[in-house]
Length: 141
Image (cartoon, rainbow, N blue to C red; front, side, top):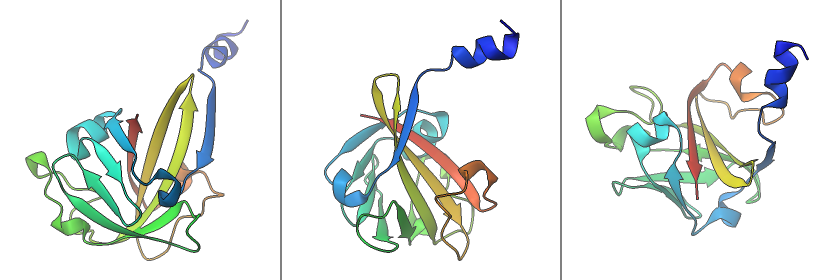
């Protein structure tokens, strides 16, 4: 087997679905990647806020109907994370989030994609190709 195909075969089973804050309200998540560990810490979700472990609240509102996975956020500049870290980038106060649920092997994970700019992201486009992506946070239950 060629090295590339062997490496591809070793990738864990991955499935992705979009998630709305309505369906995730009341859930709690632990940081999985370095960005989430070093910046936000634990995450709790309610219908109108993301709540980070150090009790920082980020207001969110659905773009479109309440089953949307795209949310507008405001007041990001007021978040105070350890070490002066920012949610998106210095000076970014508003932007958009895309919330994805992923199953990696048998573990449910939440992917929080953060976008700056005046336009919401296109969920049909790969996140890594979207110019305004500024942070990716991963969490596990």
